[in-house]
Image (cartoon, each protein chain N blue to C red):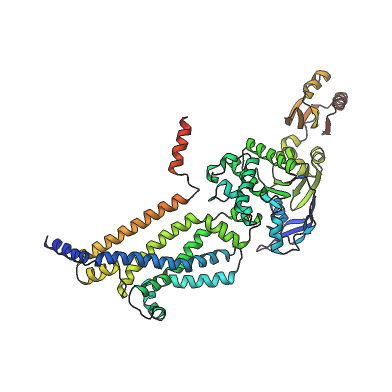
Length: 330
Length: 244
C-alpha cells in the first residue's frame, strides 16, 4: 500500500517558492491500477516522482509498505526503489546496451549473479513479447518495443509497484492500447500495483479502477473510476471527461442527456431503438464508445426536443434498458 | 634540381642513420604516453567536474568552481610558456630537464586539463532521463558513474580522445624547441635551423600523415562502437528484408 499524506512540494525560484503540490493525500491499495490525471503543469509528474523520492517532498510523508520514505536514509531509499519499478514517457533505455543488457541492468545493481540475471532477463523479455529481440539495441527498436523493454527492466527486481510516468504519451494510439493491455496483464498475473500518470482520459478510462484528478497542485477529486466517470463533480474532471463542445449548453428548445455505458450492457443499438420506439428525432452530439468483449463502455451525449412528454418517454426507455444518464440544460 | 638532390641526400642520411624512423617513433610514443597519463589525471577530473556541477549527481559548487578555475588557468597559458615554467617541475620529478622524459611530464600537465574538459563535455551529453531511470532503479551515485555515465558516453569519449591525441601531437612538436625529440625536432633543428626548408616540409608531411591516421582510425572506431548508429552490415540486412 502507498499512502501519500499531506504532501507538499515547493520549488525555489527567484520570485520565491512556487507550490507544485499542495497538501496532497492519496491512498493506493495493493492490486489497484491507479490513474492520476491532470493537465500539464498540474503537478502530476512531481507527485509520481515523490513516490520513489526522485523528488524530495517539502512537507508530508510517503508511506510505502508501512515505511515512511521521507524519514529513512538514502541507502534505505535505494533498497526500497528495487520494490518500486518505474517507466517513463521517453523510455530512457541505456542506448549502448542491448535489450537484454537493459533488463539485466537493475539486477547488476542488485549484484545478482550473471547466469541468474540473464535467465531472469530472458524470461521477462518473453513476458513482454520480445523474446526474439534480446540482442537488439534501443535504436533498432520501435517506440512500443522500447517501452516493453523498459517495462521488463522495471519488473526485473520483482517490484510490488510499477510507476508509469506518461508511459504512453509518446506512442501512437494502437501501440498505446497494446502497452496498456500489457500493464493490465502484469497487474492481474503478477499482482503488481500500477500507478499511471497521464493527461489522457482514455488511458485512465481503459484500465484504471481508481482515479485522482489533479488540478493546480491539489486533488480536485479522487475515488472509484466508474463513480467519477459517471458523476464528475469538479470542473476539471468534467472537462477531462467531456470535450468542450459536448459540455456546451444546448440551444433553446433542446435538452441534452449524457448516457453512460459501464460494460453492464451488451452491445446493442440503444439509440436506434429509442428513435424507433419514441418516434422523436434524436441527434448525437458526442460519442466515445468502445466494444470490449461484446460489452459496451463509454459515454454519449444526445440532444432531444425540449418537450416534457418526449423527455419523460426517453427517460423511461433508458431506465428500461438500464442505461444510466445525466440530464443537463433546460 | 640541385636543390632536390640535396634534400634527398639529407633525407637519405636521416633515413639511413635511423634518425627519421627514430623521430617518428619518438613522436608516437611521446604522444601516446603523455595522452595516457593525461587521461589518468583528466578522466577523474572530468567526472568530478560533471558530478559536482549544479545539475550533477552530487552537487558541490565549491569543488566545482575551484577545480574549474584551476583547469581554466592551466588551459589559458600558451603551451610554449607553460613548458618553460614547468622545466623546474620536470627537473624535480625526473632529475633532468632535457629529453623526452621531461617532455612527457610537460605534455601530460598541459593535456590533462584539456582532457578534463573534453571528458566533462562528453559526460554532459548523456541523456538526463537515462540517469534518472537508473536512479529510479536503485542505482547509487558510483554505480551511475561507472555503469551509466561512462559507458553511455563512450562514443563521445572516443571522439574526445582523438581530438586530444591530435592536440598532444601538436604540442609534442613544440616541445622540440626546448630539447624534446621527434618529428618536431627534425622539422625545427634539421630543417629550419640548418636552412633545409625541404627537410622541414617532409617532417611536416609525416606529421600530417600521423594526424590523418589517428583522426580517421579513431573516428571509425568511435562510430563503430556507437550503438545508436545502424551499421552497414545491418543496413544490408534491412535492404534484403525490404526486397522480400
